[in-house]
Image (cartoon, rainbow, N blue to C red; front, side, top):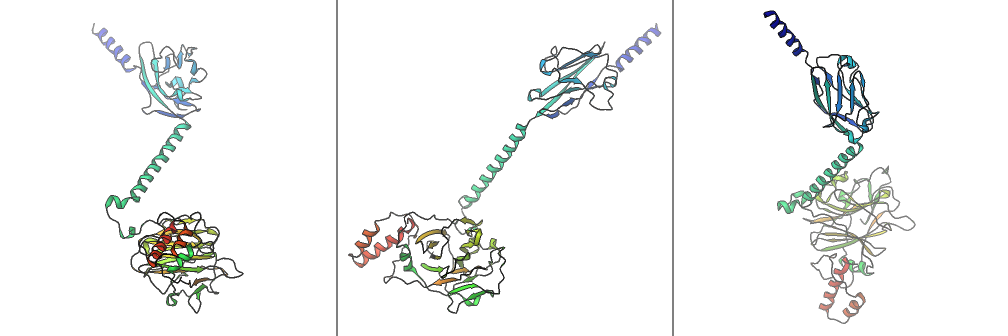
Length: 433
């Protein structure tokens, strides 16, 4: 009796120790559209699976499998979409195949519809086990989607950052020293400008000369202090603008309106290709580096950099298209209203205006460039007989434009106060012209 009990217990222990267990990877298997993939599945401990039933199916499609192996061969019972695309294939060359318990599934020509969970079901005479393998399919559209998503996020973050930077003083209620200058604005040339615009500006004409005490040694200044050019010994390679060849006017201004003209060509010579004309805050340190010559450091100018074109020294610089190339440039400094305006005197039209809050005294700034035949010459403009009436209104502010001929005719028959008022209106309309 005791021997029978011991025999039964031994048989039970043997059967329990050889119970069938299926093992699959814990992480999803990733593949892309059109490729071939192997979904690993094996028996542990390893045993010969040639005599077992191996069934791969999806979700609740047990009777409509992806692949069915039984009685030593693959059966012709399967989901139609997997026909000729599924087979049993060892997931490793060292796995031993079916004899080693490797029952992995091979899928070919993957499509997006193949993504999802696959059940690996293995059954013997007395035991069975089943596990799920997850398959993730990546297609070109996914990569494109994530690329577009990343670009959109960067654009949104950049836009938000720009808005915060743009309106930082409104948000904080104050500005730093570097931000004390207002943003530079470029006024586009107006259509149908008045032919008398230059004559009106010359009412603010000033006479000054170059400060000869602070001229660069590679610069040549005339005896009258009105013209300048790079010295013959200056060897210009043309690789970068020679910012070091700066010069500035001997006079300084801290109020009012001041106008001057600069000749950029001489007879039988082409217009200058390289020059800088503008103003600078008195005491500012001129640098060879363009990045240091910005409004926040006390510089406001228009630059002609040869074939590289025109630009104003904003940060970053703003390129301009000025056609035709100016042969004579007019400059109006409106200190109170914080405007520096440029005019093509030959064409008698307004080119652009840089707006900023000036502080302290400013002086005219010049740079004749290098490699030109023509020199840069400051002209002495003749003022009209009657002085202009100072106005607190910016010369480039939008106001209604009266009929100019009737205004001039009317001014001839009015009293002196009426004349002054009429002139103020004409000057104020320059913004529209």
